[in-house]
Amino acid sequence: MDAVKVDVHTHLGEHGTHVRDPLASDEIKAWGSVSWDVRPDDHAAAAASAESAIVLAFDAEPVGVVVDNEYVARHVQGNDRLIGFASVNPNRPEAPERLDHAVRALGLRGLKLGPCYQHFHPSDSSALDLLEVAAEHRLPVIWHQGTTFTPAAMVEYARPLQLDPVARRFPDLPMWIAHMGHPWAEEALSVIRRHENFYIDISALDTRPWQLAQALTCASEYRVFDRILFGSDYPFSTVERTVAGLFRSAALCRRLGMVDISDEQIEGICSRDSLVLLRLAQPPSSPPMQPEGHQQ
Image: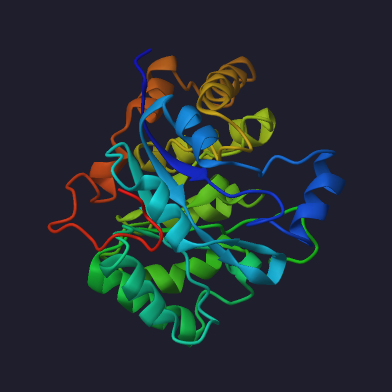
């Protein structure tokens, strides 16, 4: 198959600096080692496996993670293959102004939200105020709306169905749910099928072939296979492992008689131009101010 077109889900951030306790310790308890320890050179090397990659900031101080907008902006500056997304916790003072600054001054082009990590309900007024800024700037929004390993997260805010009223309020705003909304993939797919600008990514599911096979089956039955975006969740997985996992789960679907998902359909996910779908294909109309600390 051809190279992966766009990886819509990659992370930056160093253990002990941007990724601290409790999540840092909980990662070791859950998986036995540290994965989230990504320096800029490491990220750039991994991102080369796709033609383009979205790089996510993450403002999730309640669980010990702050990959700040300035850090991501410095990393993507001057690299046309990398697209930086801002993250602002809606609970922060002047959150809308922070997001506006990230767009106007830093040149970031999307918004990452994770209600369970940032401790807010998707329909909170503070979150809706932040989304108004995203809509003003036409920023696509990625939601971590699914479970997680750390007890510091508030998983009562993690159900995909909670995004349905948000999608109704912002019908023209491109959004997507990460990780197929696992373990609530059917719920997540039932939401996105109702909203034409809503998508879903398959990141970090290559290690769960049965769960991914069920999600692919549901996407096929709901006729939203064309809404599936390729994402790796680097460093938790890689482009190569994600591609292999997709083909493996599709083969499992066929072998068990669940649904006849062809290799061509999987290649379609990998070659999908998500930047066009998310309205990111065109560069910003004017160059941003240099990120603080950026060296020419």
